[in-house]
Structures are given as structure tokens and as C-alpha cells.
Image (cartoon, rainbow, N blue to C red):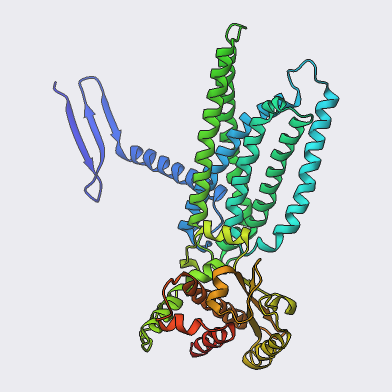
Length: 474
């Protein structure tokens, strides 16, 4: 008897059973059971995926986020840099313990504890000073301080790695000095990262304001990354230790190889850490404007106006597109430079800081400030002035271009008590236009042939009036 195979189909004409008849047995293969098994597997996979999403992503993702794509990309680079930091922490901790006296028969537990306590104490004191100086700038320079936090942490970890070599310096307390500097850098990192974290979380929360949920999920992400870093760190430490265990005899050559390998791994992770931080910060598109982003937004308008003034033509009536704040990508290096070295535009100064040191004649100074406060800015909620300061004394009849050739300047803006946000925006626009013209005047080597240069080559009073008239047209 030959084998017989029968196919049974359901109402939809799909195969449901296959019946296999042999001489000794009849076998029924139920296709529905296979389908049910596959559907169970798919359901289990979907359930695991949902658990993963609920554990690491905010409730209602992606609708609950302002910019889901930006959030995912930022968190990826943030997790990558955190992993690099943990792995380097494993390596640098070994160097720190060695510097504290672990493994040194001459060191005592008390001396190591005192070194550790002094290091932490100096770090806390430096942190208070840093917080006092930097706290007014955290909200307006979120990206800069977020990047600064991780760069200064890199410096701190590098100093920890150098701590065992501090004893080679020819002065007492060298180890304490190096370790204290490293701790100070890490305190700066903690303050800056903590201060900017809330602003970044608020940005991602958008209109839902689900900050608590976002912070919880970010904490879960950090815990997961830390677990990965712990596993890899233990493996890395064992690999380095295995190089150290050479049948109980470690030569100077072996020690040099181990040290070189440690530094290569540490520096490679540091480079990856800096790159991940920079990429993560550049991804951020904040909805607020600081000075650097506002300059980027105003630059097309200012450049267009100055071009028309140069050509002595009427401005084009075609409106320029106004970019939204989250479309602005500022130059972080330039912004950081202005933050550290102070920008040429200073807002919110006192009335005393409006004083121009280049005006030495008392009568001229009095007439000038009467015009400034009582005439041109009488109906405005701000007062603006150019403050020239230089080491050589200014001549009485110096022109504007002559002052610029040998003097530094700062554009100071003083606000009146009734000033609104719109007034602040107008004041900064006026100051930025004024700074753009002064830069153009200072960089021009030829005689004033262009209208912009000609208009700005008189005295300070004429230039302020000229730029004020342009602002009023806008």
C-alpha cells in the first residue's frame, strides 16, 4: 500500500490540515497550531518591545514629546558619552587609589583619608565660587554649559590619571594639588550638567510638561548604561590586570607596556566622549533665544540693510523669511568665546556704565548726555551708548574712525523701569546694527566712499542717530 497525503482546506480555501496515511499509521498535521504558535511568538515579542518602550521612553511616546527624532538622537549620544565616562572612571579610579597610597607600605590609612577629605573639601569650596560666577548664565547658555560640563569632566579624569606621577614634582603636597584640581573639575561638571539638565528636559517635554516622567525615564536609561559600563569595565579591568600578572614577576618593560595600553584606552575613550557630546549638543534645537542665536537670526536683516545703504538704493520690498528659534544653529565656539571674554554688546548696565571715557571735555560730556537721555532716547524704554576705552589718551577732536583704530569699545544698553520684552529686543537689534557698522568702519582701509562708511565716519552722536533712524524704519 502506497502512502496517501490528503490536504484539507478551510472555508477561505486555505490549507488547514494535512493528513498523511501510511500502512501502519495516520498522521494529522494541524496548520492552525503552527499559526497559533507563531502568533504567540509575535505577541511575546510585541509585549517585550512594549515593556522596553515603557521602561525607557516617556508615556505616550512619540506624541508626548516636542521633537521625538531629536530626543532619540540626543539620548543615543548622551548614553554613548555616559558609557565612555563610566569606563574611564574605572581606569582613573585605579590611578586615584594608587595616588592615595593603596599598595604603598609607607602610606597609612589616616594619611590617605586626610588626602581624600582635603580633596573633597577644596572641590566643594571651588564649586561654591563657580556656582556664584556662572549661575546667571546657565539658562541663556544651555548648550555651552552642557558641553563645558563634559569637557571639564574629561580634564578632571585626566588629572586623576596623572595623580600617581604627581610625586615626581619637586614640591610637597603635589599629589594633593593634582587630585584637588581633578575633583574641582568634576564638581564643575556636576554643577553645570545638573543646571542644564532641567532646561533640556523642559525643552523636550514641550506643551505636555511631562518633566517628571522624562527625568524618570532618563534615570532608567542611565542605570541601564551604567550596568553595561560596569560589565564592560570589569572585563576591561581584568584584561589590564592579566597583563600585570606575569607569574609574579613584572619587569620595567612589562610595566611600561601596561601603562601605555591603559593610556591608549583612556585617550581613545576620551576622544569618543568629546565627539559624542559635541554631536549630542549640536542636535539640540532650543525654542529660546540667547544673544548668539539672536545675532544669527538678525544677521540676514542687518546684512541686507547695510548692502542697500552701501549701494545708496531703496531696500527691496521682498520680505525676508524670519527663522524660528529652533531653526537657528549657533556657532558654539564663538558663543563660548563671547561668554568667557565678554561680548562687545552689554545689556542691562547701570547709568554710570554709559559713560564714555573718551570724552574728556566736561561741557561736551554734559551736552552729549543731555542729548542722549533727553532727546534721542527720551521716548524709548532704553538708552544706548558706545563706550570707548583705551590705554593711550584720546585727542579732543578725534573722529570715530581714529578712535576705532586704537581703542576698544563696548556698546552699553541701560533699560528704563518700564522696559518690556519688545523694548529689549529693539535695544539689542539697535546695538547689533551699531556693532555691525563699527566693525565695517574699522575693517575698511580706504577712504570713506561708501554711504555706510561715510555716515559712520563722523562722531559717535551722528552714528547713533543714523542707526536709530534705520531702526525706526523697521
